[in-house]
Image (cartoon, rainbow, N blue to C red; front, side, top):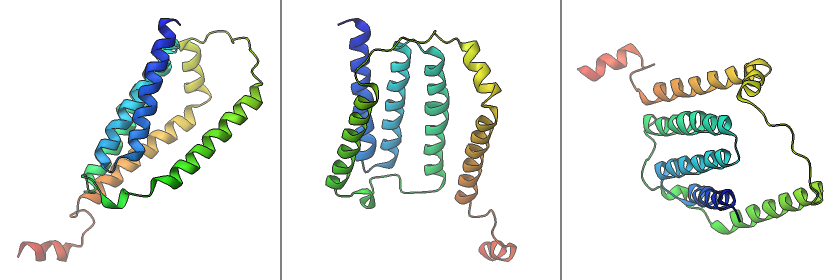
Length: 175
């Protein structure tokens, strides 16, 4: 067993453990922080596999932007930040569905590849990946950025009661 194998196993265990903590906690902010750990461990997996650009994109986009946007949206909308009783659900239906889906995907993967070895493609470069992302995939990339921006603006509008209120109601509050 090589060092890379040990790192893959350790980072995989951290990612799976923190992913399980995301879906089992009743504290919304802690779920967001566990998500940061899970996505960070996934970036570590990419680093061990030699995909440095994908690891940095994982950190910048998911850990740096999406999770921060999620946490700001929760805090700006004045949602309950502490432990919430309405998030507690029976765990056995989720375990049955999750286990069934996991077994189904494992059977599909084993059937699709039939335990055969495939030759690796030529290694990618940051230049080739950047050409693909900002060439062929630039429109979905920009649509995603507009979607995230609109979610942030919506959270700000929802958190400010004075925005969108009628003028006569605002003057009546001061009297």
